[in-house]
Amino acid sequence: EVQLVQSGPELKEPGESLKISCKGSGYNSYNYWIGWVRQKPGKGLEWMGRIDLSDSYTNYSPSFQGRVTISGDRSLTTAYLQWTSLETSDTATYYCAIQQGSSWYLAYWGQGTLVTVSS
Amino acid sequence: QSVLTQPPSVSGAPGQTVTISCTGNSSNIGSGYDVHWYQQLPGTAPRLLIYNNNNRPSGVPGRFSGSKSGTSASLTITGLQAEDEADYYCHSYYRIRLSDWVFGGGTKVTVL
Image 1: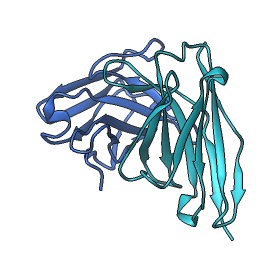
Image 2: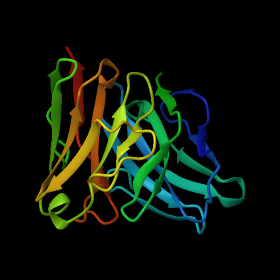
Image 3: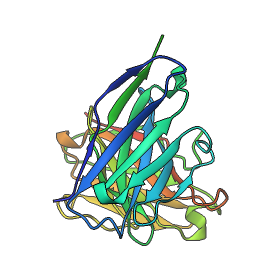
């Protein structure tokens, strides 16, 4: 069974750094990407970027380029999403998902990590 | 404002058929890129409902179907059930912004 387990909720202050994780199991990490999706409270889904865990190649949506960093550890089958300086506007639930297939649909999803940024 | 346009809400009585549209342009759906659909039940993570325009993953009921034509795609729920009340999102590739996948704004389905 394919599973993505994300790290727990975070409460941070503006300006702080943060790194959240997404650990996968039950699939071959050489054949899939891990994508990250943001959902602000009461709002829709936004695709942020993705990583190929086999070679750590990443690409980002222009909306998120330079604001977050996606990384991964193939041996741990884990992907990460990090910020160097959080803003209150980063308050959201962040989902990771396995992006697969010829057209890269989001086949399996993690449970989400709620990040709250408040002073 | 999303690149893919969905109606904010649709509703129907149990047993009825509802259709959700997803309208794009020549830079995404109209260029032949596949459309995928996700269901998000209240308080839960999204799940894949339809992939590559009209394919259902195992475990998705047959009352859900998808189609694509020109610059638009549609998700149809035939025989609406109470447990179908959720948010639904379409998803496709957007070639203007290299390696960018975009979602529709989402549609809330209400079962009357």
